[in-house]
Figure 1 (cartoon, helix red, strand yellow):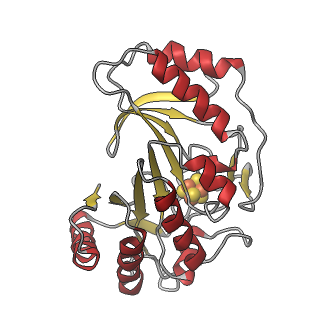
Figure 2: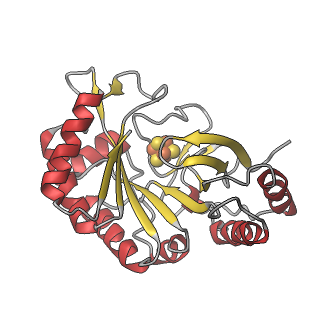
Figure 3: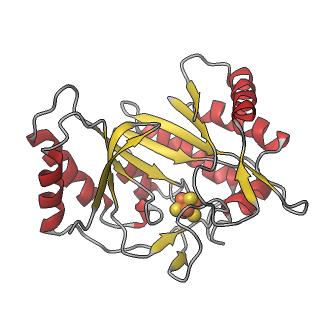
Length: 265
Ligand code: SF4
């Protein structure tokens, strides 16, 4: 039975990928996003961004990785995902990374070796020790759904210890500078709400401010997407393709930098 790895699966954003889960068998996250697909259940743990999980890789991690990788020589990404929450909460993130790098370098690949990719909700990046770990990954996909404190509170519902939007954006600017030879993607999940008393992050102020923050962060890639599975809250739903196109247009106009690739999914 596999303990750490799931897939391979075809990711719309990354191509053929293998998912790596380095958290324990319950959800642990510093956010409680309204659209979270892991869902709100009894094992849901909202934790401080300073909370650490000591879960070092066992010998099984290397074995599991090797035994699966030999069957997928055309893999595009080895992805440390938010399968059960925020991966940077694991104190042993770099131990997992180093084994993955080692195994990747030992094997033969059809073309380029797969990227070692990290998904993060960005809430821990204000801590230098976390940026020091994260900067090693080939590609970091960092969440930024909100550009105002109000939207951060309503959409991502962070733990009370999480930084506000200015600190969070500054930490992404710092991370960009810390990893000059690696790639940074900013991921924005935009959703709508059925409830009149709940303002979703699809509001003009948030969208325009997001574009300005992204311009300042200067990532390589921007990925706009929406809800694709069952969200944790019944009152949010996905924006449609036309709205995604409109938002991309706003982003392109404000960001005004052809070196930044802006895609929607
Ligand atoms: S950051 Fe990811 S895992 Fe955490 S609540 Fe949001 S969607 Fe779920």
